[in-house]
Image 1 (tube, rainbow, N blue to C red):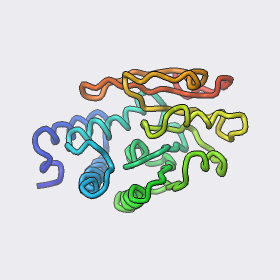
Image 2 (cartoon, rainbow, N blue to C red):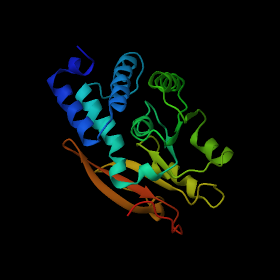
Image 3 (cartoon, one colour):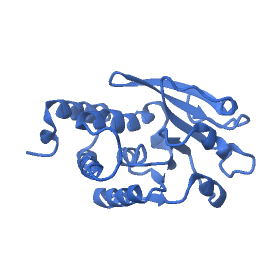
Length: 222
């Protein structure tokens, strides 16, 4: 019995729907299956995610991550940075789905860094980097060529929009924030809010919130 068959009827059904929806290759299916196994095993000892049910991990973590590609042309991008990656979401699912994409995972927690390093090695992922200092240090110390920043509710948007300060090398780059349906922007975030995309994961309604510099004319989504 393989890993997916061990997940039970609900888990196997979620898996089949996930693989079909995102047209995953055999290799990508193997990588996601291994990632799921590692995530569940490590989650028993360290707090990676509050979601532990296999079917819900598949829908609310893996599918939620890949849904970004429905609204943004990820396949045409060169480099994405995942801010506060945690268990590797959405950065690792995006790297599996788009193997030519360069991905940088920003994460400061030691145990999560150890998990991410192990996943990268176990899945044989290439052109993926870990940045282990904090977000403000990243903004001060780096100057990367980046197509898109993504953040899955790791930091408040008020902190994330620091990237749009005039002195920031990333002031013209876009940021996508994974938000709940109930999320509302704070006053200081409103000038940077450019567009929202509503989507649904299982019965849960969510939003992608696109932030950019108020003067930016660069578009990555229609």
